[in-house]
Amino acid sequence: MSDNDILNQYASSATLSTRRGLYDNNVGVSLTDRIDEQLQLEHASTLLDVGCGYGADITTFTQRYPNLKITGFDQSEAQVSDAKAATPSATIFVGDANSFELSEKFDRILVRHVLHLVPNPRAVLERVLKHCQSGGHIVIAVHSTQSQPHFMSWRSWFMTQTGISCAMPNEKLSLENQ
Image (cartoon, rainbow, N blue to C red):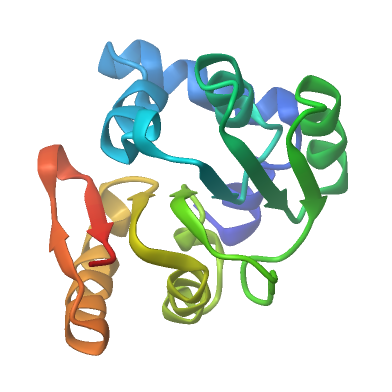
């Protein structure tokens, strides 16, 4: 599969929604529910969704946690438009995972199916870490088993560079900024 084929799968809200539905159907459980469990959003006040797409997770989390302040961004203007329409209470903007810069830190950060799409995943992770409050949680969901070799090097790099403990419950990487 070429890079263009991979990017085309994320090109519109319809194609991304189809991919999410296929995942949930194949796995038999919602990845959003698994992410929610790892993020422990019931104990959070802020969430940053890096690469939020059309806002499906933001919509779900807004409904479940109405007091949670949610910020999300994606590089697709069309998907950001859809996300804003679905969740007007969230702050959603067009942004790039490679270069985003926000003035605040978050106690929860989600990076779902983003790292395989960027040229320098470690640089993105450095930005994510910079935006995580002390005591916060970062949950990273990787795209597929094709991402696993890179995933392990990211995990090792994070532990070495930051001293942050990493756990892989059920093939997920959860980073806790302690």
